[in-house]
Length: 522
Image (tube, rainbow, N blue to C red):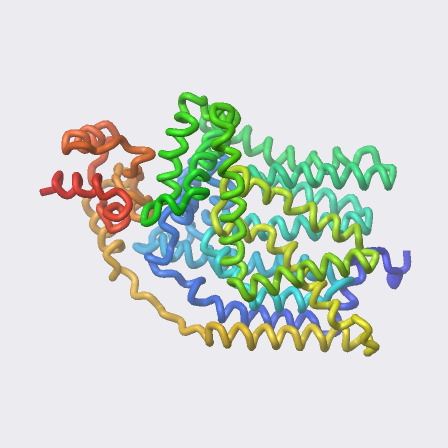
């Protein structure tokens, strides 16, 4: 095959990148990094008190030889372990590990988006997608949850490899996509499994067209090796067959009740209140043997009633994480225009792949979601929006090819930068003085008073984890109702709790328990 022959989607992108796209993209990376510095350099209070702290502690446990089940995410724990190892002896290891982790995740996200943008370069300039990424708050939201950021990164690269496979028929692309699908399962089991089935369907369709009967085997083998290999390693290490999948799925099902009816739990933790309400409506996890289907069968009407409310919540929170009503609306309109342009421009197959890829988003309506979950499909949305932007430079406009491919994207990037700075201004880097926050002083006290691994009762796990202690949850869905001081004392003895950390979150979310703790300590 001649080197100048056009072989398909994204194949001739290197020649198109030689005209200055890469240096401009690197400049955009530096600008984006500078704008994101306040998010990338968190203080103790800026770290997620639940999910983010859990992933970082799982990384610490991993370095001690404790393998995490599928929830928390083994892949996320592995990434944070790499950032924890050089910082593990620091007094402020949690803050430093989180900072380095966010910088690494930001870089991975940016590189993943650029990889997808170059693969999409036959339709839209990579600079257009990077310009959309610059103006969007997506990166800032994603890096605050390492699991979501890592899944989005791997998903974007897997999508680019899948697209390349379809138009080059190179088996190596399918192998890489399957390998990445296995990593996605280790990152987020639900969405990763759905994407593996999507990849299998694509491979079957491509195999029929190309008369490759082994296409589905090629799509399965790398994923099976990765997931099966980790499952076997986990079983040998822990002698446990509980991989945390069904327990986490049931927990998500219960928490969704709180998200759907969040307006009923104003001022309280909707996730916790949802668990309590779900147990009243659907039965307890023990009664349902941790089976979501069994729980739904006990009250299908209640489950069906919450689906429209979940869909409404998805729309509301989706508008927020994609930039608010104005930018979210513009992005949505550009994506619709992009769909139309791809369909009109004989790129129907590209459109089909892009629309099928985020099918896992249905889980967010049927099971549960966090706001940043809704950013997982953002690579697809940004690709469609970039096609929409590109359409404005080709509609009935007879200008030179060079202007279409270079000048128009550059003007769009400049516009994105101007809009971003007009909204937020140039960010000022507020370097936090470590050790001054009350939570950090509590961590220092715990470290000096108790041995590593001691059980600490708390509402959120971040302070016990920062002190390298064991966390015992002190909220109503995991702890018994504290009707008296004796109940609190019995709970502490049963769980081996040596200290209880009382803070504002406990006071606001569990006021009854907070009062018992206050009386218990007097």
